[in-house]
Length: 292
Image (cartoon, rainbow, N blue to C red; front, side):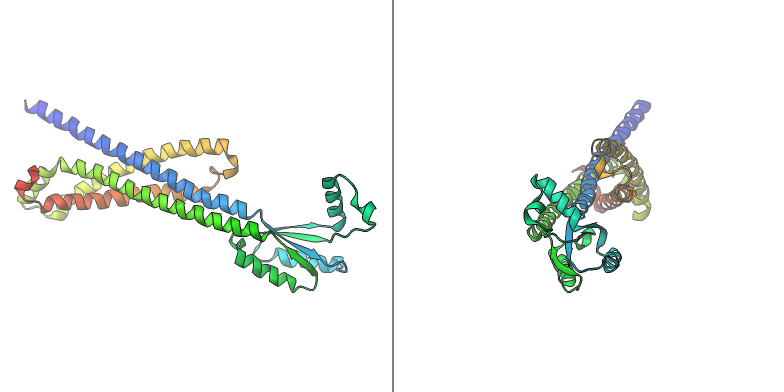
């Protein structure tokens, strides 16, 4: 009879551990997906920003030597990602192809100017910083005019801030939900051992001594859950990279590192904190309160 009871208790304990691991894995998988979206949203936003250019129109009397010196100076600037030089002759040819006729025959001369397109690093694509760059180049004696799409920059900055704000709100909300779900799973696991906790306390074991094996057990279960979550995330990352290669998920080692580290740290912290307070609660209960 005792053997059957022990076997039942063992199966019950294993079932409890299994449910905790699965709960933690599912929650961490959800958190990992949100973290991946949050991290890659920054990447996508930066990619969009880096397609924005400021165009410098050069004066007609600028010599090739001075023009090359200007290009070299611009390339060394912190805000420069890359530059593209377009001569007035090439610009005229492109414009003629766009309108379907040679406008130079009608005008008799080329009214266009040599131009340098400056594609900026993402951090500098804001209305304030681009205005500062514009004002700086307008003072340059080689530059006739500076042009960029100001309404587009304002709209782009506003929308990116809005999307980032709501992503943070949603991620924070689901992060709290994850903490509560993992906490509930661990509390239920410890609840089944509340009589063992009280027995150990009654025979003189200290709270730290009683709490320690529960914390280590929860960390082990959380680690297994984190590994399962990362395996599922790896499958998602593989297929997303396969169908959206422009995101460069598999080669973005920094993002993947943050994702793996975030999942393991979340699993460790949530399991440790949840177990600490769950065991503390049962340690503080009176014996007759354990039945409720």
